[in-house]
Image (cartoon, helix red, strand yellow):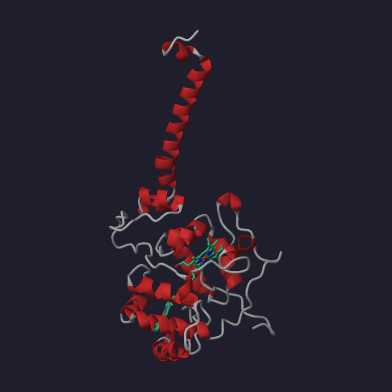
Length: 270
Ligand code: HEC
Ligand code: HEC
């Protein structure tokens, strides 16, 4: 009864478990290393290692340089967001920020409310302004105008500008709150396509640290940013949070959610 080796192979249970284990392993390797990279451009753009780390939610570099190879393409952000960036700054910072902001009014508006397709900055979370300016400065977010301007800003300038804009009243559009009338993608996302609801990060259900206030932003700006994330031209969102959201969105959906967030306040709202 207790013969070793060959006899256990004759046992159909053992034989089949070994065969199915091998088949399953081969299949998962094919799916993970061949099929997924072939359908998702983003998988290969940043390298396999980055994808594995992203899926596991750990940083892909522990010191050293990033394995991502592509030159010319802005690389992922390296700004670490901290709660302390959110703390209200003193009035000296706000005052100094207001003076520096005179260089920004041409595009971002006298009160941080843009009249063109540049983003509003009034009431923006300070950690967002800090992170975005750091990313422009480091070339992690591409914009010829903003990269040139940010290069001349010191750490203190950036902190003071952020304090000033955070102090201005927010875009005159009411915050989004959960209710059945919201567009489906905003309210519940599309679980089958792996699209998380916007309100789970941009306010409404939760406001994740680093997710900008987007209510009342110019529609053209919102569409342009979402398309840039989808094409992978903008890749400064840590852990590819936004790229993962828009990857499966259609042009019509991008238009719909942008129109929704760009809405202006109705009379009486602020
Ligand atoms: C000549 C026009 C112009 C000027 C002047 C300008 N900006 Fe901008 N800014 C833009 C445009 C356009 C964008 C969007 C660029 C993009 O697509 O990434 C932008 C983006 C930004 C963002 C990112 C906002 C977000 O929601 O992601 C910040 C922060 C910002 N600017 C701050 C400033 C500050 C501070 C100054 C003054 C020191 C300034 N800008 C001056 C045109 C300008
Ligand atoms: C998992 C959280 C998450 C979800 C879900 C999410 N976002 Fe974002 N979004 C972010 C973060 C974080 C950023 C800032 C990225 C960065 O650091 O540059 C961002 C940035 C953006 C920007 C760029 C704004 C600017 O001023 O630079 C737009 C537009 C945007 N999101 C729209 C949406 C829309 C529309 C949805 C729903 C379809 C959505 N987001 C869902 C986390 C999320």
